[in-house]
Length: 259
Image (cartoon, rainbow, N blue to C red; front, side, top):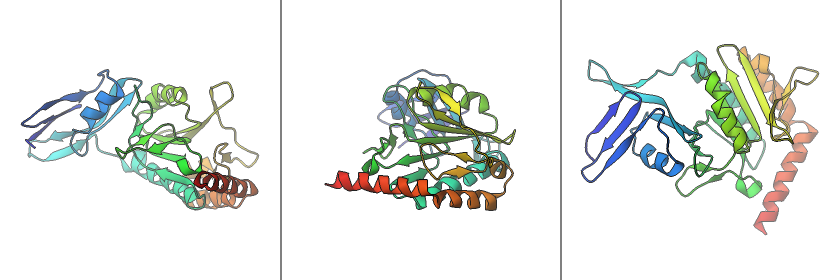
């Protein structure tokens, strides 16, 4: 392969045999073309296709010292730390829920025509247990997972706007946006009318998933960094009768598919 040349908000890869067009912020294209170009970008470049429009999230710049840097830098408090905490929560739940798996972050071919987001964290029911989000032969996830999480320090407008619309349109049952700057967690669930509505707190101030029984979250503890409390609450959910019923339901689905 020839030399890789990267520009701000774009990525260009040139080989001796072909020149793959760069991905630019705001370009319009379908899923197939986006994936063709995205797979040719260098490590560190990050982009998404949201309702047919390219959004470049991270790119590589060469400084005056000649060193390559990923831009913009990933903040620890505003994104990296919260993403790790949310991944911990969903991973803990998946460990005790056979047939469920957490992923973070991952390229998701949500729509075969116009949407390829890269959620910060997601939780899905595996196909053998009745889930519709599958791992394709291209090693990417395809279809709508049951729960998607976006960590928003500066991207809340997009995450609560175009991304929310995209996830709603593609039937993602639950969607979480953690607005780290405001220390707020928005948890939406898809109602029978096909609308996203906020998940209500229970009498103890706990958010309880409607799709994943036993997935309980103390959002105040999570946004405040009290992970011991977060762990204690999700452990209570995992020990609940509704979680046991869900695990048995998944087990029966998996057994039925094996027949």
